Image (cartoon, rainbow, N blue to C red):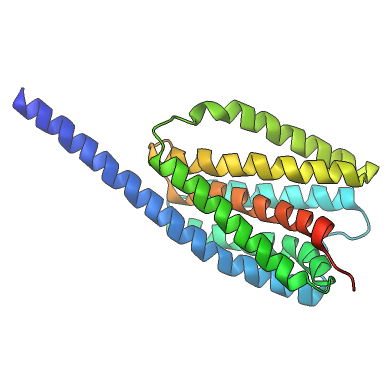
Length: 230
């Protein structure tokens, strides 16, 4: 009986150690992923990069094709060191895709401060959500269906607005996206803490996308409400 109890304690302790290691590695890789993102954004601004400037729809299709290609490659290599390299390559690509928004924002006289405000706001949101995921005893796994439904609404609305070009709809999309992806940070971090995600490369990819989308939509809102062309 005592031996069985000890084995249970050892199993629980071992599981906690593994989860803590996955979370620590995820945070380190997430921080590292910011370097190629910034590099890609900087290079894209210098090159005036556009995936397909002539057609937003074709640009969207190309982006999704490249992104899902990276997702497939990351999934296939996530259990090796190559997976880290592929993930960092993806974050560089995402930096390139961010460059048009960065270049547009820098067109404001206060563009630099808007970017730093968006970065600070994103960091604050991440810190709050990650802390709640860590200290809360509540299980947030039930959010997954609602979050996925919200994500689908954002995607459909964004596709529609490629043709409609409605400023009010874009504003609504950005506000909803910030809420959805902030909640996704909470969900994805707790998945690691609870052992629902045991691969730090996969965990980093998911949390990176959450953070990236919060930043993009927050920067868009700041540009709409705080951009100064003087």
